[in-house]
Length: 200
Image 1 (cartoon, rainbow, N blue to C red):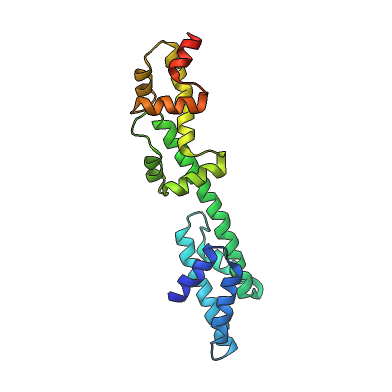
Image 2: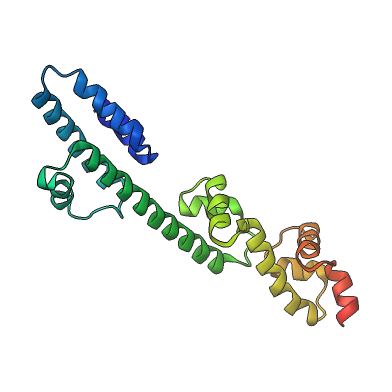
């Protein structure tokens, strides 16, 4: 199990060379070539099974996965490369699923004061730094800026109805009017009070 953990660590990090070097080291420490090759194969199969359970997008049919790793006398090095590719691809799909989950949650709770970057991270099962990275990769803005901009756009509807700045702030999900004013100025260029004077 200890060897599996080390091999999995390299595969998850897409470190093909380190994974192969690790296998070669194990092979050289084996009493004979055939024993070393059998040990490698078992190690890769066990690692593949663990990864298959860890990544739901990886490969549904475990038997087919294991068969494909060693089809036509495939080398251990090639099997490791296949696993690295599968992990990379399923990680990408997993990230997309998390991003869509975050967008859906934000959409449903956009104008609630309970919606924060922290609550979105908790809902998606990511850390706040992972969530920020995910948003920047997909839409080039942080989740905080995304929420702030959407709220400010909606707030303009309420401002045109001549509601007070304080009331508008609460209507669009800001628990503090100061935060609303600061966010509005960041996205619109002027404060909500100035916007009202200019447009009403």
